[in-house]
Length: 302
Image 1 (cartoon, rainbow, N blue to C red):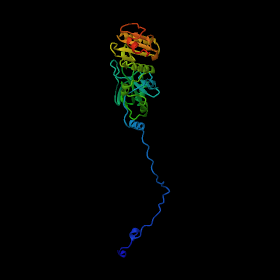
Image 2 (cartoon, rainbow, N blue to C red; image 1 turned 90 degrees about the vertical axis):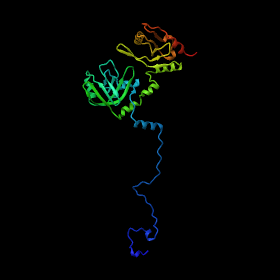
Image 3 (cartoon, rainbow, N blue to C red; image 1 turned 30 degrees about the horizontal axis):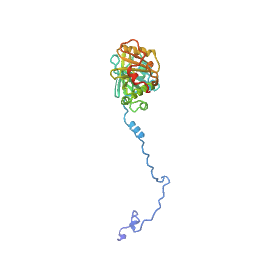
Image 4 (cartoon, helix red, strand yellow; image 1 turned 180 degrees about the vertical axis):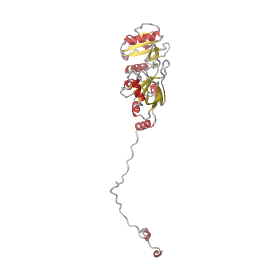
């Protein structure tokens, strides 16, 4: 090809002129670090994956509050507690049929009646500060619904809305079982109750833990266990570490309502006829004995 007809441009490469390119030594830039092989990321453990999933998914409510956590969340005699260790909290009864106050919790929203006799405490909630919301119904259980803030209402009602992604609420949930988990494994209120539950199970005695609550005048009473095995149905059982006169009087009131109840005191391994009181239906005084069902099944193996 006649290159004289077309002068060489400055943009022509050396290869275009018929000469191979000269090898050039690559000099790394001082500002650019040398390339190294990237280390493989460590595989995520099952616990880490579960934690990441829990952080992405909204937590389930309500949760059962363990007895050991109740005082830190709410210990005041009033509905609102501004001095609890975990901060401002409200505890209210839901589902009450004999109360002038009506409270409801429906998912992320709640309506709680205002106690006009505690204006200073009410102002803490009206201000919109985060407040732990706890509820109870008939029985001895307390439930946690998370932290809420007041978004309005009337002079007689707080209107509340749950605070999403509240870190303190999420931290508390780690120690609170879900309702489904409690059904599978009851959350006993003492090691003594748990020991008796294990003994009943070992002896194949079918019992239910706190299945009913009785109304005794202005008070409510929830027995620890109920045996529903005929012909002893229902046999109510109350467990105590030592003899307490107030518990004896309480069991008397239960028997006068027509229930068969046994008050057991002391450790499981020390159980005998002298370590319990039996209250037969409609009797005013107890017998220092154990029902035949318990004497037969709960005696230590020889």
